[in-house]
Image (cartoon, rainbow over all chains, first blue to last red; front, side):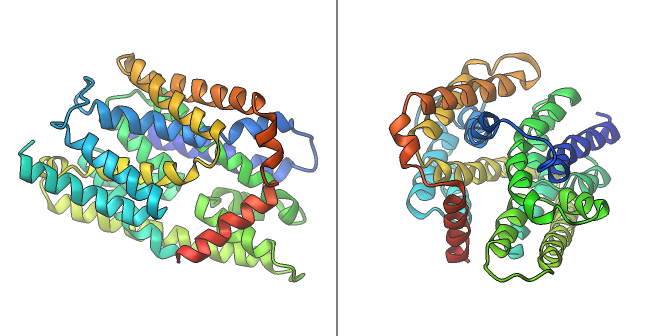
Length: 106
Length: 239
């Protein structure tokens, strides 16, 4: 893996979504539809990362109690829903994963 | 608020080294990209063997939400010279945005609010660098195989769950998430993680369609300013 290319590319595209509009807004009009659509990017991307990591951690769908990531993922989601606290979600999710793995040896 | 970034910086540094990125490379990502979630996703993709173009494209998609932030902030900073805008743009993260918009929305007419922006963003930047370095050093001290077996990668998944669940405030957002998640599973076997991009596009499209099918809900939705105020308020409460 060429790390210079990777870092340079990631830095460039990140800067290109942050800076130009700071400069251009007020000077050129942008479609309202675009901004409405952008609101759906975070949930779509986050779910697209989370769901496969949790239900198919080894590359095959594993919706069983033998899958500790599924169990810890469900617990994390419940904590996130009830508390809305990021740190609590991570903390309790990790503890669940460690304890579940240790107790059931999966 | 800067304190909240510390565990993530440490975890990022450790995770990056654990998946095989060099310590210099991990530090370079924090120094030059400075985007927490994009850095995490990048590391995740490196670990799963994605190619560089896919990682860069995913970074772009993941960071698209910053367009919303810069558009919202632009009216407040348009009087500043270009070198200021370049610097403020480079350091525009989620945390910086929610902190700074709160300050700009306060009724006083202080002409120095951009210094508040710079100060907040700069302190977040420094904290992110130091915590990344701590993570890199910690990971270098431990066997990377051992680190991988700890299930540290789940930290990332839990982080994303903690970000996703509270953000689902209406049905179109839920539709976007469900479709994104389902399509990601269906396209998982496609090469180079390209399924992630396809899933993102399908999720966004589904969200937009769901929104257009629900004219009533759109009317009830508070305007953008109220949403931002509510968000900043919640962040204040969480402190």
